[in-house]
Image (tube, rainbow, N blue to C red):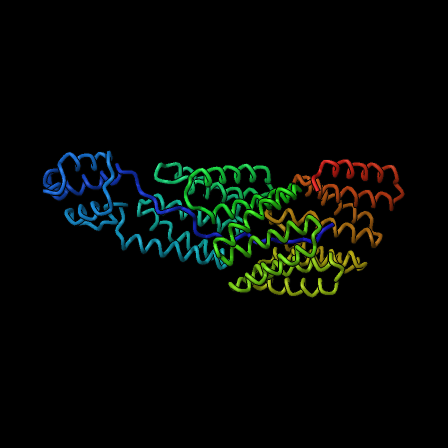
Length: 455
């Protein structure tokens, strides 16, 4: 059995969508429409600077003028250069950029409901610009905020719309890789781990094949693929990916990304049984989060440090860390995140022989995690703790109910590790009832399942 942990989701409001250049024919259409509206011929517009044929090529989208040429044409046509190039004036572009930046900042600050409201408010101004780049940025940003707010299916719908738009030639492979990455994170939250890995592999192939600078995105891809491998119990692959992510994050000199990656490195080390190394990584991550005043992730790390200190034989320190984590996450996080801490406390109480306290904490945690699809990974072990706590109190029928529920949750997760733990607990329950044959079958099933699991 292991303590429940909640990991950083790496705040990522703004997209990696680079400032795109719309295809030449759209710019050419605007040049032609403005020229006709001004009563100019192609010869008039060309003047002594260009030939009539060059203007014709611009209007037909056969060639794209330089920035200097666009500015010169804008003066001749009496419009803003930004409007001529992208169909929106510089002032309007700045206004919409500001609206999107405000929504992105709210997401970075973990104020997800406010961010969603801001994205909804700026939808009309974004669409009014007709700039596809801004629409994709809006869709991707809103999707991330909704995912963080546990509206994962809505987030996936938004990202699929963004992907369709990003198929246009003005977007780069890095742009497309970013959207694949975001979809992968959503699938991870729904415990569709194999799908998430495939999407991350696609994102990495696009990013690395683009030959464009994208170390930040690559770091995120490696970090999230490491999480997936950890869930699949391929800990060596998880370690390799998190080390690549950490190398990239440190080169970027980005405290948040470095903190996020140390957090992941701590979780991998924990699963590999390297408790001291895991604690060292967690303490480094905590220091970086404190540096940027990210109290929510500090709370998540306090939860993990509580679990690590328990594994290191320091239950009293573990309880202090967990109490601090609960206080921080109740104030700065969400009820469901606070529930993970309560679940960890339940586990500590169970392992120290306090079955009644373990039952109370586990029931409290499950009530807080109710109807949270993205917390299913944490529901299964909490149901297991509750079942074992009831078993320790001799309430065997109630214990069977929650151990069976834990087994069902683990099956939904497609997690052999969680299922094996549930089968072992059900075996213990059968043994307590004197059903030795049933107990033996359950123990054998757990042992056979774990033979196929990578440790």
